[in-house]
Length: 125
Image 1 (tube, one colour):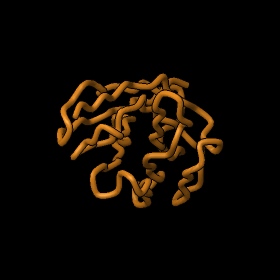
Image 2: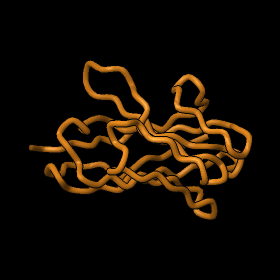
Image 3: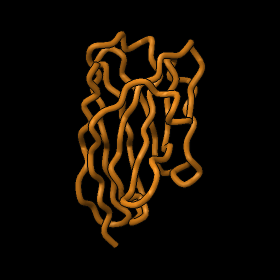
Image 4: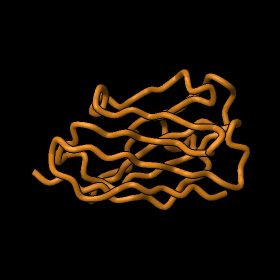
């Protein structure tokens, strides 16, 4: 299984980025997906997730209203659109896959079986 995350970079506060995560080696439609992030010296934290159906999308309170997660099953890709970025959003962002039933989506990192390599997001003030 490979989860290839991309789209990170350096952006000014208030700017936008779109992260992508392309999955291979798994049956995409059987998995829900999550984005997590980890800043230096901090634990990896939940950001957003999307269920298999796409209809259930929980968000961390810190990103609600600014970030949007989505999935394209035919492209085996999960996206994280990040608007209104803040310096505190600076972190390495990881996508992860979780084999679940249709509408279930988890926010706990221990529930996710597969992880990508991460992409760095840096927001300058």
